[in-house]
Length: 398
Image 1: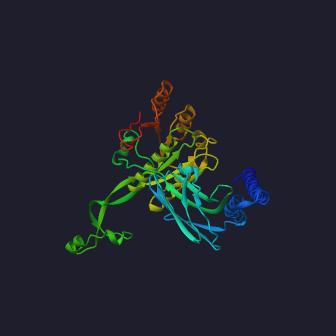
Image 2: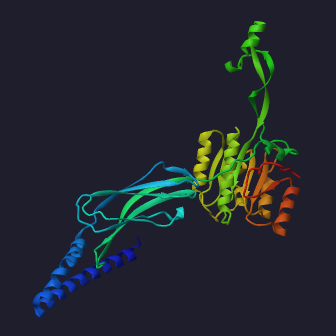
Image 3: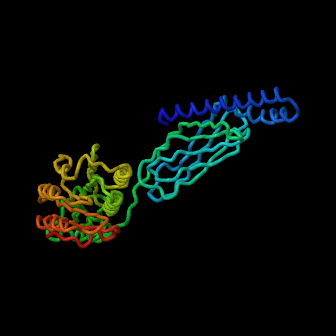
């Protein structure tokens, strides 16, 4: 809470307290000077309504709060169930208690409030659900309590620190992957790494030192009375480096969603994927495969935010970037001449550059000319709609 606001709340509380004392003194003076049943009846009727806020003024509202959110990681669009448990030692009789769990602004949710009538209770629980969670790292800071007396003469508010963080992974879509090699029909495949595909058995041959035990064909060995091993077709594997443009744009969340979808598709199909994020705190994860790699990419995509301090063309000079031999998948909403020039220098015999251009509106004449210029230089530009299923399909080089 800002220091100035906290000071004002305290001043307001003291003013209310002073007002209650003045009213009580006025009621007593009226009864003393007026006398009679009616005046003393008014005084004694008002007395409990005055004494309660006086006692409440000195009550410290000594609650402790515990927030339970399980699990700590979610996917975008999930519902998050939150439990807040409040406990106290001294059972002061509270007429009402308004409990508000202060929701992080990043969750884009309305305030969550619930009223209780605790009386002398020492413990009670508040449960609520956050629907359609948005991507990001969301940090809960405080639980706010508000109470008062029956006439509204005194209100008391307290914030209880209760810090907790949750992570919401970005949304993703399945992308048709089989036809991604069509992108390179006229240029070959990037970074060919020979690997055996166990699903493609081309024949059998005599056993040679160094062959894996699992390659032995036992049936053929028994038939010819010699150790025989399976011979496989080799396939070429690609390393993919996803470069996310973090410059501010209306379609930034769509860019993050596409980056997550592309990484998931590549890794789920047995290839290697890495990621490079721009901005002040530039992040680079080298291409790799496996569930741990995918989780690491999703973790950083969950936390990434718009940052205009470093554009994509500046990343082309980064040695971590230019030193990789991979398929460079640049996810952006704006194509510039500087990007094209940088990508042309990056493009070589062992790598290719693909621009996945995602926009929320139509293409201008200038953008159309830039796309044509990029294609003439041997780059690949793939305009992507908000549905990504066929984003890898049907892309050709010039």
